[in-house]
Image (cartoon, rainbow, N blue to C red; front, side, top):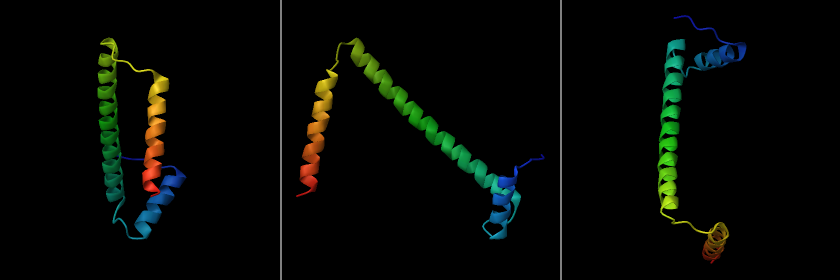
Length: 89
């Protein structure tokens, strides 16, 4: 496989090889691909968790289990104030 890099990427690669962090361009590429895969897996986990929460909320809404938004924000505000009071004591 042949890979073309832009000038900035070539400099990063040369710097990584020059300071001894990696022994070859293949090591840099393998590490980069591992990190990309890890990032994508983490993103997929977050998206799955969000979808699950949306499904829960949608089911609650269908059941009529809704709360007034202003009341919810007031509750959050009061909890925040209470937490601030506890942390300053």
